[in-house]
Image 1 (spheres, helix red, strand yellow):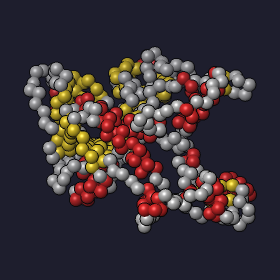
Image 2 (image 1 turned 90 degrees about the horizontal axis):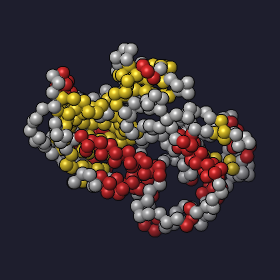
Image 3 (image 1 turned 180 degrees about the horizontal axis):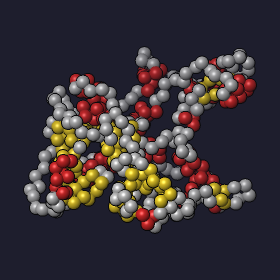
Length: 421
């Protein structure tokens, strides 16, 4: 693993190997300025010569890859994991609950007439869910550019023709004459397509999602089937299984098509040279280097242009955004009759300690990361080195080492996910 280095005056120097960083720290020739990612600053005067450093980004809908290359050597590699899908049925469906709370709060405070129909969107506007994912990719490069002398960026930003992906033999006139032409909406088209209940042949009453929207399904006609009321109820209850697989999804292609220009334009603001690469070029280079298909390997292969690249045996990083505070709209939940019942503690911190903060356990002298703030005024934390969880500990037992950040750089071994704090 390589460690980022700053000079005594704060200038970004070339990253160094972890063994050398440990030696400098032991001899008091350097000090730690960041543990996320790990960065040291020299305490003695030295030359500030640097080489050209290239950052390579492979954006993706669920995950992405990033790598740093100096000449023909990879010195940093990481996999970027985005937040949960907007409808993924995980811990409280974070974004769905947030949307529901926000809408309810608007009507609860006072009546405001809907104005979204006459609001003009600024040029380059992106839907919030797409922009959030794009901002994660941009912020990762901002952090790397903060600690490393990056002079060039290579970004994969291809275009996807989703019509051709569905029908390779599509003709130019078919783009204006799609299968839903002449129908008011998707539901009307699905009913016309299936005509009768696909299970029993009865009259159509409902349209069913083969892959539920709560699990990431879409309103694409290939994910919808027509059912009668009885069959739809049985399928919903799990008493009837349909031997039909949902169609192919194009969420990832839609994300890249919508966000690529925004990502490139934002990165150009802090990296002087930005090079665009197509997906087929990345595939050719990855196959030439005989690397398996992963986001990290895609990032490593980008921009090699037929040349060899040295990939040292270094552990990569798992990079992911992390929620730092409890939003105000989560603090109370209205019950019947307008009574508010607090289901989370009202504090953003306990004794100055927030979620995600890196602390030192005074009892064992180990580094721990705060996991949960309890309403009792105590904390849950996880030991950074072993992953052992500390439950219901008093805040006086912890000493803050480093404040939490919006991005977590978690070292991991190849093929094994990082143990999340």
